[in-house]
Image: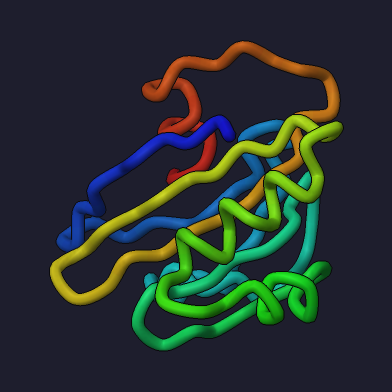
Length: 119
């Protein structure tokens, strides 16, 4: 599993974008919630509130036992033939996880992914 961890800057307005296709994923409300599937986006979830969005929700929910990351790790293992990037973002209240399919096996640094994902 390819996973990067980012810390949010809560004082700054931002939008979320697919790090591979540059397509916009959110509705500009600064909440880390994605309302539109676009680009190579697979799923998102919050550690505490267990929100799900897009694609493979039912499968990930079946894996949920004790934690979001545990469910995500099982999902990624079940899809080991695909190159899935997990982005973890923490703010002062919650931890959010986003899954993206890296179809072209792009080698991006954490800094490049952060610049592309949060603008």
